[in-house]
Image 1 (cartoon, rainbow, N blue to C red):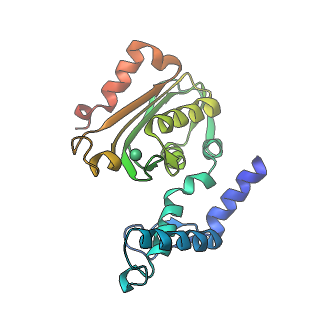
Image 2 (cartoon, rainbow, N blue to C red):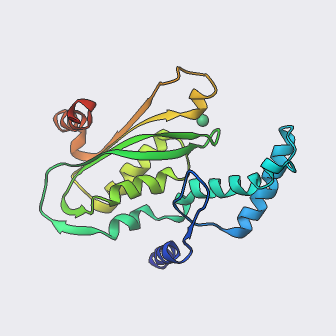
Amino acid sequence: MNDHSRDIDDRDSDMVEQNEMNGYAKIDQYNPVAIGRMAQQFRAVIAELGEDPEREGLLKTPERVAKALQFLTHGYGLDPAQILRSAMFREEYQQMVIVRDIEMYSLCEHHMLPFFGKAHVAYIPNGHIVGLSKLPRVVDAFARRLQVQERLTVDIRNCIEETLKPLGVAVVIEAQHMCMVMRGIQKQHSTATTSAFTGEFNSEKTRAEFMRLISRGSQA
Ligand SMILES: [Zn+2]
């Protein structure tokens, strides 16, 4: 397990390549063999849709789609628990730690369409704290997979619970689902909210404090 994690970390630095395409000039990792195979399938899909895959504007589309999808699911190559373990420190602090408004982008596993929004993550340390930047990375590692919002919420909670063994964990995700918005099933701006708690966050008082701290009103 540790060896595996180390491999992934090495790949982070070694196989990094800057993506030239607009929209995500981020660090991407591609598996060229898989990209080639997927591109071939997407060419067939484009033809099935009634388009001409040889049309100039579409010539490179299958490869772009394959690369985009590989980027949008790169969480499969990440070990979220290892991300936390890499920055855990002994500390006696026992108050609530909250990182709110974490940008979150995922793909719904039913339609492979985006759902995105904000995650709020809190925990109450029990001997260990974790570098604050690691919590958004854990959110990202689980979000960049085929997901449902409910499981994403619980995945993040369980990972923090099992790795940090804190006094409690709270995760709330608010997201809009393109499969609802674009397909016109629900109102355009409806948001789905999911939450998952452990330990002290199951007490009404602690949970209420958390909800108050993440609510919009506290932003100013
Ligand atoms: Zn969907």
